[in-house]
Image 1 (cartoon, rainbow, N blue to C red):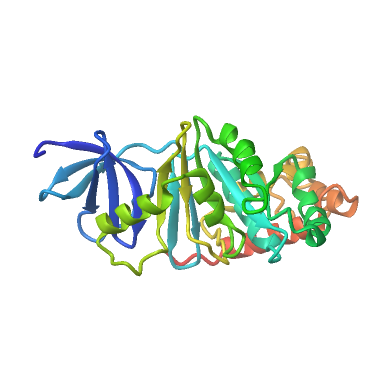
Image 2: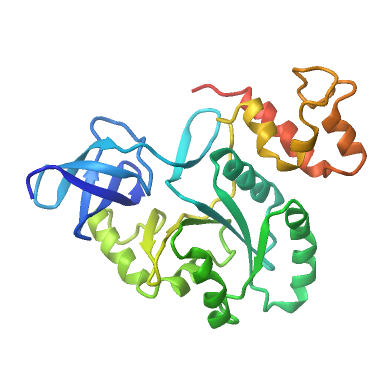
Length: 298
């Protein structure tokens, strides 16, 4: 195949990418120069450079883009996704900070977010996990309880209809059972990983790369490596206030039109915090994110 090719990026590791072409074959590809602005899920135009390699010539306009960032650089997570599933578990304990940051990222990107409480078969830890997850449910986020290992059939039955016809990404801390969920949903996941690893040419030790799988019943799911931090330095103050959905009824009702919702008098958001309408931990995160957005150096 020597002419122009079209594909979807199905794996990314550093500056190495794998595209699935229209005929379902895999092609290792790179960007021109040192660009790293490619994400799993991107629709790309390719030009062959050898029998199994290509260079990315163009990236189609994205419908959505999820990424995280610190003050020095950003890390693309996935493009053109319609749903984000944040995997939490009864054990080990999950990070409220990471969950809330992921929800903010989804809101800012226009991606529907869900929480997936895994390992519900660990009965002793379930009540506490439910109690901690209740905050997000009261905000209107879907909270689905599953047990990938304890009840795989019920887990599959609960998830597959929600994934059909969608491109979804699963994220979460290490230890939440995300890999078990992916293996449950994608019967040939291990085979796909080996094929993609071979196409990436990164060696048998590479397991921490983002990859996209097609689901047997339709739809696609993207698995991302577990991580412990979710920086959102790229979001402006205006984007942040709109990404906290519980702020919405109060925006525009502050005394000052340019209110930062931090220390200002007669701030409608702060009044809602005092009245218990906005959780203090959520407002504290907002204040932290506003602080971080002012530290950007790139």
